[in-house]
Amino acid sequence: MLKEVFSLVLSLYTLLYQTIVPCLEPEMLSVNTIDRQKHLGTWYFKAAVSHREADIQKFRVLDNIVFTMEERANDTLLLTGHMRMGDNCIKQTWTYHINLESNDLELEGRPQRKNLLWSGKWAECSECIIFQEIEPPLDKEKGTQDSLHRHMLYARSSNSSEMVATFLKNAACHSMQASVTPRQEKEFCT
Image (cartoon, rainbow, N blue to C red; front, top):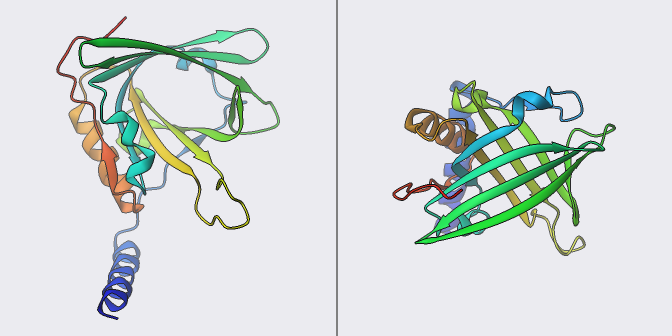
């Protein structure tokens, strides 16, 4: 009973707070109309946020991540990640297809996943991009919560503590309390 009352009070407080101090809304980028050339090249992973720890847990073991985005033929993007885990470098690639009738990218092999791009406005950073991944519940009949839902901040520069703080603050305003930022104690992998 006490837990339910506390939950209700906390919900009312959050609602009242958001009425007084509204959250900044992110600005979606339509992948079928953006200037792709502007988004090609090197991106540094700066932070990930979610409503649940499980959605961002895999980033906790990584020291740093750098990505390269390249355009391929037929509205296809190739994302290559170089991840540092301890003293080891891990390279992984993802292929995304741009559907001209949709606002999201389709990850090859995972057509159920929505991959959305947002401007760096949430981080007050013009040289940033936010990538959102959403997957529907595994059991659609019983599931009410997405099986994956996270936002990841990427920047053109490897140094960027102010933008990360702003990103985390704006995400928290939207009840995304789980967050992770890479330690960046070691060299980036190439």
